[in-house]
Image 1 (cartoon, rainbow, N blue to C red):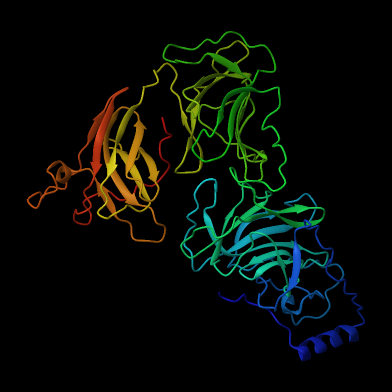
Image 2: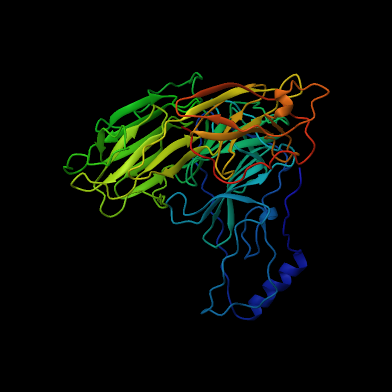
Amino acid sequence: MAPFRSHRVAKAGLTALLGAVLLSGCAITARPAPTAQPTIQPTVQATNLPATVAPPTIAPGTAVPATPTLLPTLPLATAIPPTTRPALAPLLGPEWRVLGQGDLYGTGVETVVAYLPSSVVATPRLQPPYVGYGVAAEQIVVVQRNPQGQPWVRLQISLNGLFFNGDNRTATTFPGVPDSRTSAFAIAMEHQSAPVRVVPIDRQGNAVAQGFAARWANGGMVVETLILPGQPNPNPIPPEPLLGPEWTIVAQGDLFGLGAETVVATRPAGMPVGPIQLLPGYDGFTQVVGQFVVVQRNAQGKPWVRLLVAPGTIQLNGDDRNPVVVPGGPNARTFAFALAVDGAGGPYRFVPLGADGRPVEAGFATSYTAATGGFTFSPLLIGQPVPQPGTLSGRVGYPSSGNPVLDVFAIDADDPSRFYVQQLTMNQPFWSLRVAPGRYYLVAYTAEPGTFTIAGAYTEYVRCGMLAGCQDHSLIAVTVGENQSVPDINIGDWYAPEGSFPARPQGTPQPPL
């Protein structure tokens, strides 16, 4: 494990500096860093371990009488005039990746949640019910700025244990913390003020312990056992409802195949709206709603609002400070929405309505997309019929006893910037994509981050039988019409010369249909 950079002050240099300050007639009173310990659950026990864990890199500033290893280098300057206020130094060095920064816990104190990327594990390989663990970390820290303006490490999670409040000599043991099999941590965080969910993983990215969550409570950081869907809870508490009684449930269950309970619901408009008056081609818009939500139960059993559509805003993942601007979305004249639900898991189509029931915008559609792990949006066209999708399906004939993680793309042959994608898990051979009517090339790419990308496709070589005499590796454009199903498409040509297939598409995929 690469050591942290530490800034140490030579004893002679510090003595000389303090002497200079005293001779200048300026008396400095050092205030110690806060020492209040966070409330820890009764199951937490402290055990003394050697001081083998280095603290995170701290930017220069004034000294804090805390752990010597956290002491930053003092500048060789004389006393600062009373009218000058020095700039605050960064809380962490540049090698840290920030997950959240600001007054995260509503305490008026600058706080940073960050991680040091793992040099051993490229990416976690966790399966449901673990959801959202896309980062492999060597260490995780929660750092605050103390009253002297200096960094104070409130929590440090490392391969040697958990350390609280700058004490890097006493490790805390807790169920699910790292053991000898741990090479890194998979981490997930719904938003920057949310609890940090941590799962110890081995070199292959697989979980070696159930994991834990770290959150702010009672003036400090606390850790709790990570309770997973489908796992027994030693202290069962009835889960709180995801929504109140004022909501009307449209669909409920594991709607997106994530292993997480999900609810789709609506509320009526706040004021009467006239009958829906839409142009021909808008099929299925039978409801007038004031608000629409998609809520999931997170790993701690709490409601997590993944999508909110309301007359004044569209919000994702509970972030009410950064509303989403969508072409065809609500404007200042919007009183309600005409809603069409094309399936329990979407797509969901909206047309903003005025008080008279007439559209004030073209409207939009949204769906959950596995490739992005969230909701994507596309505009509707007023007066144009919504085309019914077709289905392309088949298998991936990867040249091995099993296939790795693969991304299967249906690329529009007439507009390659438009594409649909499905991710296959390891050893999953079959794929299926619902797409708009058109012509598509079918290409699969290996999805291992940091590795050389390999591509396979459905080509004339496959249609020829992949025999020794088959030499044509041209892509085949598969045509699919409305409500049509085209099965048995074998993505089996992994032998084409380099450059035969298009590079992996970039940009945002089309929402699933």
